[in-house]
Length: 416
Image (cartoon, helix red, strand yellow):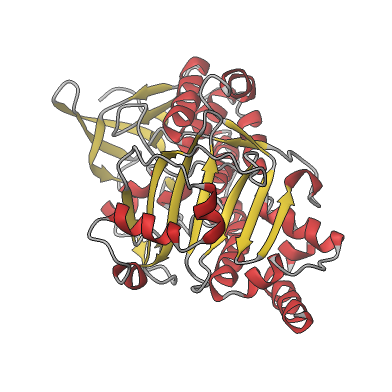
């Protein structure tokens, strides 16, 4: 076998590409193995401003800004929330935490390819159509058995360290029996792209629109505008609820549910449903450990919460940044503790997001969002979390996320 690579990375999505680029900047040679051919479809199209810091750190910001218009990426400066006759919005530039206050809403096929191409330009080796068929972490170096679909051959490759950035494929959790049950109910997302033909003056294309079902507080919709008159449209609810919605096909259920949300159906009154409707069931996932002997899990390969606050790509990029920093120290001979140096700091932000996701579905965070008399300072702190700054412990609503959120919810509910 040839000399091992510095790092093997499974998956060329955002976490894999960012990790590869950051390792290249530190002088290492990663090999990225991707099952698909790019571009390929993915959901998770509404980025958070915190993502921009990681894109900048990886040296990809110029490419993103130069190609955004050509690729149909939509400038994004916040989020709008609708629930019946209640409405509010958050302008990310008015957040509590310093840093990026704007970002983009992207087609993931083009966005992910852009990041992967930039990682390659920086010097990373990326092989597409590579399926991981076996993994061995018992030897001196982690070893992967790979089937190359393009050349129809199998081979093995080793690296000094292994990063799983495979997203929902969750390669290492499956092969190493690391999967653990999520504590969230089984929910389903039904989604598509539409030619939206929105002409309503009260619709802001610079913000994602999150709409709550008028009767069912734990059913919600996303509407993510792109810059070319198209939108990503989806609905999320517990699987049992969606089974009761009339319609044989997911597309029938999606249109029926859109018709039940007055403002959303008004926005989409002239929309053309010209793209197949997809669905994902039971997407929330967890693992028993984010690290092990010479390996770590990035992004969705480790844990995925829920799409409601678009946290997935942010968590993925944060994990890539932490992993690259920890690996650099390890490769330079420092003693590192992957649990303390990688898993624990990553989990702090994930726990913050989890608190707000759980409160969204029980309705208490919705009561905060739609409370009309929120103090501006508190709204700015909440805005920071919605913008992705879930690791900023100078923010009281991060540092004491559960207690602060509970108290604030009670105040807003009493005020109603």
